[in-house]
Image (cartoon, rainbow, N blue to C red; front, side, top):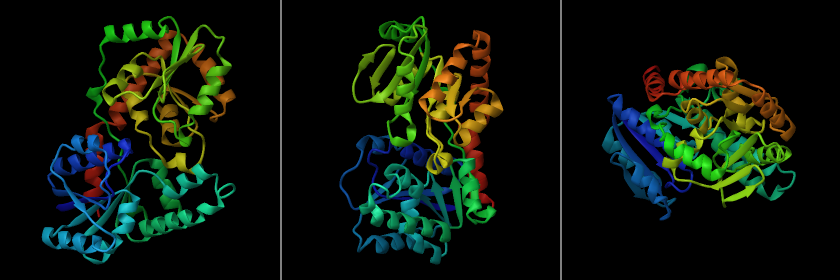
Length: 374
C-alpha cells in the first residue's frame, strides 16, 4: 500500500509519544509499504532533538488554519495514497475530511484526551472556566469515534473501552508498545560504582524512573518511602525530578538522558509504577513498563490497566491494591519478605514477558494485522 503517515503539530516535549510515532513509521516501511511522513505545523517551535532522532526522510509543512486543508488535499492527490495513518487524536480530528476523499483512515491512539483532562482538572469541580477546553476535547473524541476506519490501540484495556462504547470490533486493533530489547544491557562495573556513590549497595532498592505528571502517582510513592525512612534495609531511587537531593533513604535524581536510563533500572531490585486508578490510566500503556520488564527486574505496580494483569499472569512482581501510600508500603514489605531466589524468578518472568509481548517483532506483527485485515 501507499501510506501517508501524518501528524498535525510539531514535536515539542512529549518525547515518549514521539518514540511510538517514529517506531510505527519505521515498521510501516519495514513491512514493505511505501510511506511518506508529513508533519503539518503552524508553529516555529519544536523539539530539535526529536526531529534529529527521526531516522527516515520526512517533510515538515508550515500551515495556517486557512491553508491546511488545501495543502493536505494536494498531498493526497499527488500521492494517490491507499491509507492515511494519523498519529494521535488531534491529527485525526483535524483531518477527518479524509473520510470523504477515498483513502482508508487509521488512527493510532496513545491515550484518551477527555479522560486525561478530567484526571488533571478533577472534573470541573475546581476549574469551571475550562469547560470550553473540555467541549473541544469532546468534539475531537466524537470525530475520532465516528470518522475513522480503524483505531490502533496501545493497550488491551483501550480496545475494551472503545468496544464498550459501541465501536465495532473490526474497527479496533491492538498494537503493542514494542521496544528494542537489546538496548537494555549495562556495564556491571559502572552499576556497582553508581550504587557506591548513592550509598545503596547493601540495601533492597526500589526505583521509579519517569515524569512526575499527576497520572504517574509519584507523590504517593514518595510518601510511602517517607513512611519507611527509618528502615535501614531499603532505599528508594526516584529519577526524573528537577534536582538532586538525599532525604534519609530516598535518593532524588534529576531527569537523565535516555541512554543513561537503563543504568538506573539495573541498580534496582524492584522497579515501581505507582499509577492511581482512573479511567485515563486504565487505558494508557506507559513506555516504562516494557522497559522495566526488559531489564529482567521484578515490578511493583498498582492494580491499574494492562500492566497489573500482565504482572499477575506472568508472576513477575506484585500488584498493590491501589496507589495509596499504605498500599504501596504493604507491597514493599511483601517484597522484603521474599528470598533472593523468589526475586530472581520474578525477574526472569519479567524478561520472558517482555520477549513475548513487547518485542519489536511482536509490534510489527500487530501492525501488519491492523493494516492488512479490513
